Length: 115
Length: 115
Image 1 (cartoon, chains in turn yellow, purple):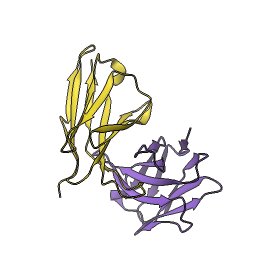
Image 2 (cartoon, rainbow over the protein chains, first blue to last red):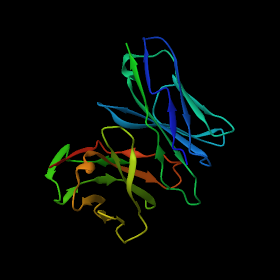
Image 3 (cartoon, helix red, strand yellow):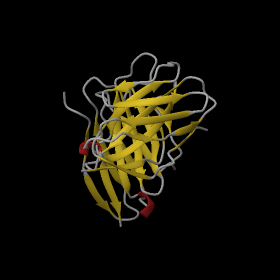
Image 4 (cartoon, rainbow over the protein chains, first blue to last red):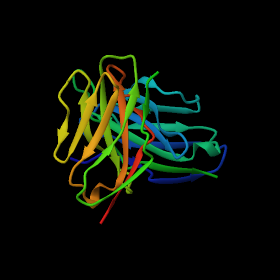
């Protein structure tokens, strides 16, 4: 079974631009979560989607948004990029077992550099 | 708000030795899950071990085991017979039940296994 895939793997943008990152979850997984990883702030939760609905959102400005499609694929968008948005963006998918708390499977990440 | 603390930024041990990584957390929740994730230099995050808070028995996965002390809010990871492939960043993470997969992460411990 294929793992979580993220595209693109690397991205270079300039301040003020916008960017869209894509995540394809493991087949059958219905929940997709996004995390930002930086040397200074570590790993931080961005948001989680299930059945095309955002169920949870971390403490990020409105420039960060996302969506999920009917096939569970997800995209996240960052508008008006700032230098501080440079990070590794990780996507994770989960099967959604009764009771929750099941494992999240991570993709390889998208390395975004903002110049 | 929940917090996760990993007090050891970096550790190194000789191959075949046993090493213990520390993790403490702060929460007022009673139902939650704890995880140890491994992020090798290739950056793919991989689940090492998972613990449900309601289970008193410590989780084990082959060479990996945890010491879960709920009252002390401590969740340490023991790696026995360490191998070169164990070299990685190790992250401790907390998820409260019904949080829709929102992981709260520690800062990580860089573990180096020396030949």
